[in-house]
Amino acid sequence: MIKHPKKITYSEISANSGISIATISRVINNSSNVREETRNAVIDAMKVLGYDTSALEALSAKTNDLIIFNIPSLDNPFYSLIIGGAKAAAQRNGYNMLINEDPIDDKSIDAFTALLKKTNAAGLISTNCISRANLLKLESLVPLVQCCECIPSMDIPFVTIDDVAAASNAVSYLISLGKKRIAFINGPIEYKYAQDRLKGYLQALAAAKLEKDSDLVIQLHEISYDMAVSAAFQLLNSEKRPDAFFASSDVYAAAAIKAARRSALRVPEDIAIVGFDNIELSSMCTPSITTVNQPKFQLGLLSCEMLIKRICKEQIPIRNMYMDTELIVRETTQRCTTYLK
Image: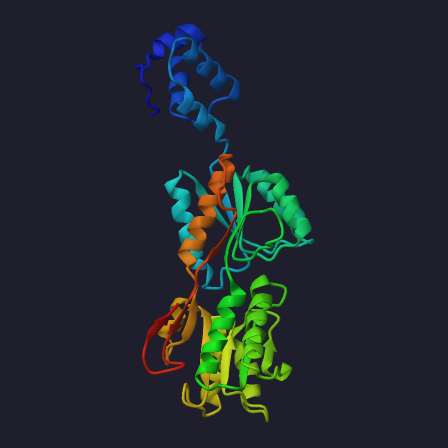
């Protein structure tokens, strides 16, 4: 119920507007089952009678309460806490959220824009890898915020992390342990995170004056645990066996542990391993995985809060937000647990 300084008398509004008391009740309680012209007539009558209609008009301006959250895959456990954070912000602000698992590329863009129109979505959050042209198409239809994956040079708000710095810090840590042949297991290179974590890996090697060896870089075309196990096993049994792995995800780090066991190698005594994301799997593995923690819940929460401000046409003081990460040291690099900023 909308509260007003002056007590609402439905009969007064009905007499002034000629609209039934039942319909007036639906308008004041913001029911969707009211035609726009009827809603406006009730608001006009209330103004004539001296009622404060500002809160009612703000609710009326909110044509839909649906936010679409687009992710590449529900199979990737990384997204669960991000979605949780976004849903918390949406519910707190009176919005519903629809999770959409679809790529957004030249083949699918028409179907996706049709979905936005069909659902009359209020806004969109995407964690997908999307081209400039398709981002512009989406931005022209609904308010949009990029989460994790983004194109920083575009004038579209985003919330993400500094993947280059986080990766460089993780590899520098392995180097500080005396590791000199550090392999890198990376995900699909079309993603910003994969490009930036590769940059960070190479940056750390260059800073330590360690030679880059392309044979130590495993570039996977999809996020697959089995493919990562196979590739890591082959590398561990080659003439160029590494003494450490840096993995662009904890799933790949777990794959490296399995490959080391198959190769009769001990972790961390023979092979040190660092992952990325700090998903639940990283602490459940034996040995537990040293990893880069991303503030996943906060990434989702802040992305959704930023989007809601855009939906409501509020000013956004910070349009581009980089969240802090931390390196969590566990058993795949040493037999104790510490936290390094």
